[in-house]
Length: 317
Image (cartoon, rainbow, N blue to C red; front, side, top):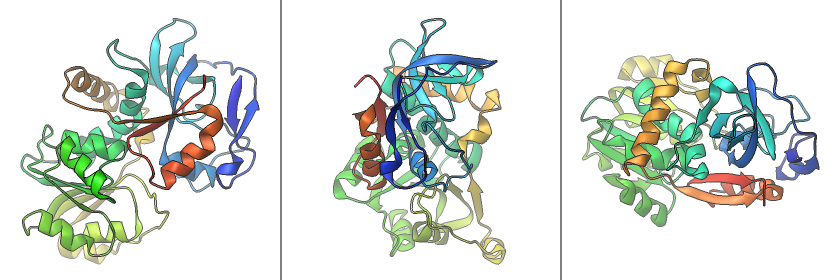
């Protein structure tokens, strides 16, 4: 089968097209013929060996796939952990989910990782209360575009989006944000407070790090929550306990992989997301689908913020 494999860590050039045997599913696993493989910021961190979890080489990247179960012929979406950038991948049966007939593969794969992340930012991490203000950074991205749309249905009183360009901010407003502002680090705290009618904000969903994290933290009201679900800038930040105490602020981390062993955190949330899509209440931004041999370009475009929505690879192209 055709697959993308890394034999060393480094830049996009380490993503090489190779021919590998079709993997054999182990105990409790299923074999999936891949129709779409998800491309995520986490993949760029794994490529440089800077991810939360460390990898061993050689590695076929790709944490989630959509496709067809070889044993049943059922259309499914699955969290495979790795191995997704290929024509075939194995995944735990417990993390493999049927795709409703009305939902396309590119939509399902976005809901699995980005959708579940956005859902848990509201419900599990920030625990947003009715009427609270919520800031969604990178609002035109995979997680951000879904989080903006989930804001009011999940109780947010005011949804403040940030994005880097006028076009992306206009898209955030179209998706349901009440206001959209520049997401650059300089002056960010002041812009967020101004966007909330002069009041500090209750919750922020942040995946950049560095100055964006610091500006977001400074904009939090007492008892506000800053939820970190990524570090796209690769700029680590230290938080002083005295600051948290003095302002009654909370910083919460979220990594979806910690939910994968707990069906109660996956099954109902995913069913909710599929239902919202089926009812026309949630719009998934399907980004470009790159041919498998352009995996390096896909990661470079994602890291360079040249795309919107969910990026995928098409192993058949």
